[in-house]
Amino acid sequence: MSGICGFVGDGEPAWIDAMLAAIDYRGDSSSRAHGPRFGLGYRFYKGRPGKAQAIYQAPDGAYTAVAGTLAPPIDDPALAIDVRSRTSDWAALDGAFGAARIDPARDELTLLRDPFGVRSLYYVEHRGALLFATELKQLLAVPSLPVELDYSALHKYLTFSFVPGDAVPVRGIKRLLPGEVLHARAGKVELSSWFELREELDPALEDRAHAVKRLRSLGRNAVQKRLQGEARAGLYLSGGIDSSAVAHWLKRAGADVQALSLDFGPMSVEREQAREVAQHLGLPLEWVKVEARDVLDVLPELVWKLDLPFGDAVTGPQFLLGRAAARAGLSAVWNGEGGDQFFGGWTSKPMIAAALYEGTVEHASPEEQYLRSYHRFYGLEDQLYSEDFQHRCGGPGQRRVLLAPYLDDDRARGFLNRVRLTDVSLKGSQNILPRAERVANGHGLDVRVPLFDRELAEFSFQLPPSLKLHGACEKYVLKLAMQGRLPEAVVWRRKFGMSVPMTDWLLGPKPERGVASGARGGLAPVLDELLSETALRARGLFRPEYIAQLARGQDEPFETRRRRIGEKLWALIVLEQWLRIFIDRRGVQP
Image (cartoon, rainbow, N blue to C red; front, side, top):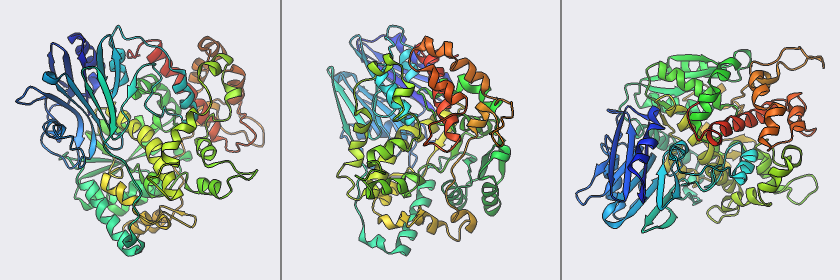
């Protein structure tokens, strides 16, 4: 829970104050350093374990600021990054951090982002200076910085429900990708990767018992090295295998765990499994009831603190889960994100089917299948986009080119691991992790994501594919590792995922036998306000007729699941709310 900002070049010290003020909720203390051609700021909570307590100044006059924590924890992350910066020795680093080091004597800036992208860093060149910050809204707080919409970034958002790649929806602003380092000296900027996953299959792991033993050991270590000394560990317990495994390892580590689970009432999917795991491990469990009106009440604050548009329906409930954790007196929360990405869940089976049948009439290519798997607006551009937006968003192939470094990369030879690499690098590192960090940090919480551990991740790419996807059984090796540690019904239950009742919240209950109930959902007011025909025509991006069709509960004939309607509408609602805050109001708190 912290943030940094700064500049090198012809900047103004007042920029630092403006950028720190934009993220006052990320701490109760600030540290600053500035000189003739640089400025550096750091916002943090004083006394939080594992965090730098100030900007570090080296004896030779270099300054280093670190937002976040290293794993395993050390007393002063800023000092550690300063030492490693002198030899570019990043190889052993792990954790959740964004770091900046400025050497005024050499007119040099180094920016560093953690291996999987829990923490974010943005940068932009402006009026002879290179500015950087933890959040987009910090850069928009610089009054003279132009704010113009990047239509290509919006085009990608509408496929993925998040903005992938290094661009953001504000033209000219870039972000450091996970595992990337930026060096700037005398006005020249260079980017390079300091961490990459690579498939290196280990024949010894063909022995199932050995693989299971190794996974259990690495899982315990991943949790242990992220315990920063907090009095209690909050855990988001969904009832699935991933968060339940983290619960087991936290218990093994002797942590005082407070579990929290979302409660959607009768529409909850894994409520009984979460209760069973908590009872099995002896964990206190708090139910956080979420209804449509709760999400309605926090929507502007949620989108402002998300900083970028994240259009998954789970985001609102996760934000309310974070609020409950903060009210319970917790300062750090843990989750089970990463199990799908590393151990063979989510897109594995449909992608393998696409690869097997590539070239036939009935099946799309792997790239097409992957883009469609997000179930947003890929292939529906003619129905959704206005003529002007179609013209502005650029030529074809922009989204496919994002997949090429992973689906067609020699870092993974086997197709399953290429799919996994794509999932880790896109859905994991550019959606799940930064989103989790922001909804937690929005309530003064640190987030711990132990399944996104470097050693554990590298191990997952040493495993034979049959231990990830075993016939139709996903995450097979993780299930074997938890067998006998968790209730059998939880371990071997197929994945259901978190099903947020967004369609009911927006449109009301499903009609019975074709007869509508007449009741509208609790989120209907925001649908009426943000996606009204008047609002849509004023924005000029979308065709009101298609959105009206969705609002009547009518999706494309090939989409048989009603929940996809709510997911599409929610992605558009989040985007319009984001545009009003960040483009119309320059990121000022609503």
